[in-house]
Image (cartoon, rainbow, N blue to C red; front, side):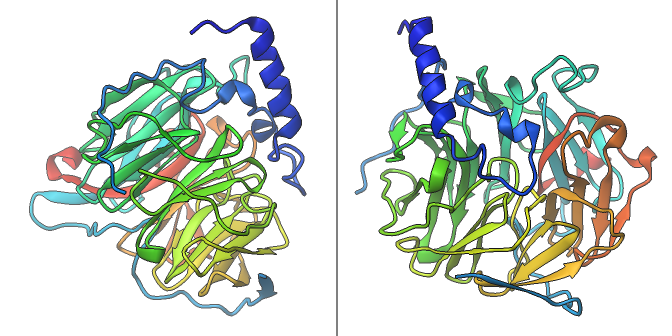
Length: 413
């Protein structure tokens, strides 16, 4: 389908004028976030070749924040999400996989103490030094670990990328080419690729459905998520409080009856989507928090009072955790949040997750905190962090997300 230069410029100006993520992410500005505009349109736009190769799915039918420096860690359970990934047993072991820009991946086989098998599309490239890695085929847009034991990652924003899958976190195969998505999520047996027209996989990302309309009013998807609340939900967060949900594994989509316009602001890189019991939570990068206790039909707004630097909402099973402003914020109900200062005080948590062992692993967040400034951390409680020796990892392209899963023991030998 041919598209004129004039029409592309017109569409870009419209999206720039309406982009709720630009200007709504106070109190701090992030040049990376401000650069992401219409040329990163999601799958289904005319600048992307989305053949997919898959058949359609069968038809089927107010927050408060208080300071609580004495808060204590909680017992083990789920994560972002926590998978059943202990440290041993049989022929499989638990690993963490970190996904970064320029198609970067690196893994940890020893509970986050060291990171190995670092690779990318171009290890010599330096992001944002003459190269716009936010608009690049290798722009990381999310990674999940499926219930059946597969890592699935999506890449590309602006220039088309693709979707990769791996059983060991090291060797990846591309299963969808020439696409760009705003996020990825996994719930039950399904993997969701978030876009104005979504794709869904029922076989761990091996094949994908044809595009399915998401009912978003805008075009760009800023984050995709999944929740066990309400019997299972898939979520898309677009610009300006534009949220849609699916109750049938992505086949059809519906809109909340009421939702604050601030919901999901600045969520593209920071914040995320979490679940505690039957409560769904959306935390924006600017610290705005929305929660729903009725399966996503209605939402209530609140605020943490500070911006969020962490790239996910981490669940321990009994509470949710996010990081920002040198503190960790925790909630047992999705509505009321306590905060505790981090130690050491200068730590800014970016990509983060919690493993089944109870260990938190993270990479520092913030603009220009990569290459020589990149740092990896471990923690037993999400409050007190230990920086890894710089010999324990490769300082390279920005890291977006980290996930835990189980892989063949031979991967780590």
